[in-house]
Image 1 (cartoon, rainbow, N blue to C red):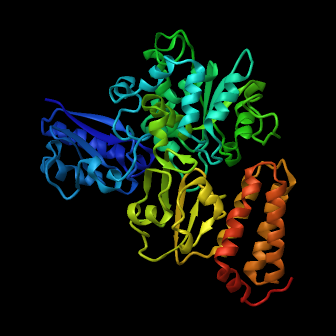
Image 2: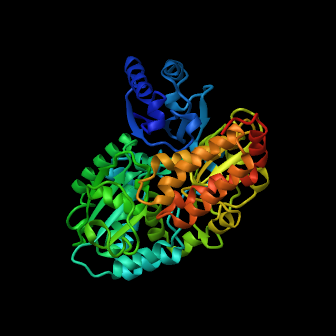
Image 3: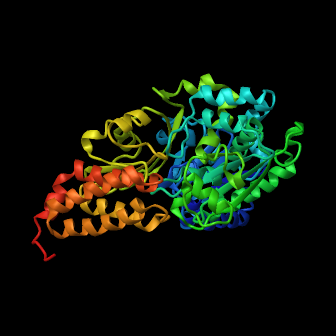
Amino acid sequence: MSITVYVPQDAVALGLGANRVARAIFAGAERRGLDVRIVRTGTRGLLWLEPMVEVATSEGRIAYGPVTPADVEGLLDAGFVQGGAHALRLGKPEEIPFLARQHRLTFHRCGVVDPVSVEDYRAHGGYRGLEAALKREAEGVVAQVRDSGLRGRGGAGFPAGIKWNTVMLAQSDQKYVVCNADEGDSGTFADRIMMEGDPFNLIEGMTIAAVATGATRGYIYCRSEYPQSFKTLRDAIANGVKAGVLGDNILGSGKSFHLEVRLGAGAYICGEETSLLESLEGKRGIVRAKPPIPALKGFLGKPTLVNNVMTFTAVPWIMEHGAKAYAEYGMGRSLGTLPIQLAGNIKHGGLIEYAFGITIRQVIDEFGGGTASGRPVRAVQVGGPLGAYFPDELLDTPLDYEAMAAKKGLVGHGGIVVFDDTVDMAKQARFAFEFCATESCGKCTPCRVGATRGVETMDKVISGIRPEANLKLVEDLCEIMTDGSLCAMGGLTPMPVMSAITNFPEDFRRAGDLPVAAE
């Protein structure tokens, strides 16, 4: 009887030796005369336990981790292929507290299925959402997305149903669906985990979008730093065409949707939708002025629906279970679940899918287990490099678009980066300017020049050169960048800068107490 062992091939697991673990398991099993079939999966998101190996038993899957190649012989001796006792035995994955407490709607197949197998995807409930969508008129599909309360998960939080409706109503001989998979924010990896672990969920969500808006072609813009995601998506798309869930006559519906994956060139600014479209067209990735909006004049001047990976991948569950079921999660105007990515100085970093409304402190304490260093948490940045730095007294803020905005922060893509009490917030404020100066597309003066002047001025503050006057200049720069920048790159850079100055003033006073250098 064949024994199935699941070994992840997520980028984190690969970096930690998952391929060598898989080869060691296969070789060890062969020496023992065991009939072992190895299935390569994505990660379940418990990144501190990778590579986390699972084995199918009569009682369900049993997990072991983190497994190194040196552990394999001992595991085989302990009978791990039957779920045997071992120091690395974690039990049933779904019962591990980190997973058991989550609300896994979008990520329930990640780490479970063979990512590039249409058959495995359908065996675990895949394509039920598309089947439901094909039974409705386009207006009915858009209504489901609208009534679910789904908002763009890329950071802006714009209601997805409004954008879908705009593209649906647009008149054109050609429409496009484009997925923004240029996940460049620090501390974020949900898109990557989805693309490497359950790419058909993204493909299905984009196909539903095409059916709803009348698009027949689509593109996934994948960041260049994600070669494993790119390969997995390409293989999944090819298998999808063979299985009849992509291409012409999808599932016998008479509707067509042709999908391609394109690789970016390493520019953070291409996470902005109009810059992405410029790059997709083969041009330099610089921001377009709006209007016109991409929904009316996007890729090649045609109506284009641009959504993030996490937005599209929420749609199949909504179509299968209904808008009302999805809207029962969350709070206020932030409905459904949020993929939270916990990183930085944290003991248990990884992916957490939870309903909007959980507090930052709950995420850090209940899921993250506190800092990896064991020192107190001092600052937490939520929402990527353009997000605010929150001190301890703001950590009870719910992860909710409006609640975060009220505290001058943002949810962004759901990334949370933790810092302990050794962090220097003056240097973090400088880094925000430096990041913007490096990644700016250069089109508008407030962003291009403001960020560069910001770095220079923060260097003076840190060096103790007229700190009060230079901090006032920083505030003026931030105001100009906020009000005058063409896009969020320059417009939001002031958020981490001013939050650091406001919430951690002692670090800037300490910088100012240094011996004053000459101008």
